Image 1 (tube, one colour):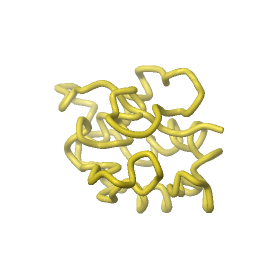
Image 2 (tube, one colour):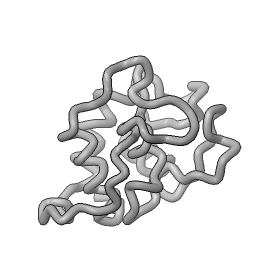
Image 3 (cartoon, helix red, strand yellow):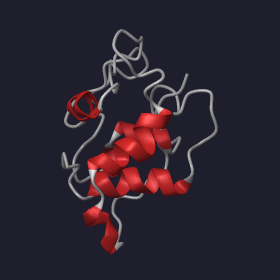
Length: 127
């Protein structure tokens, strides 16, 4: 079973490609193959990412609900700010609550966490 985690601390990027990162790229390149094994309807994480629509709806602007972070006020994805977005913090192993993601697995490649960071910093649009 796999989940999401974060750790970079980078607030923004000067990379011109950041504005072109789409949620479709994040979902197919990171979430679909890494997170959906655990983050499905009824899982204890209380985060359904089983489809692209469910993932976007349950991530962007939504407070954490799981046992590890649900008592905090942290938001899963704060558009424009990766360093305050729980998904990015967990993927980079810099979160203050809960477990790093993917749970029980090695940290994701920097190219994948950068993709998530750039999408969030570009406004976390549903595209």
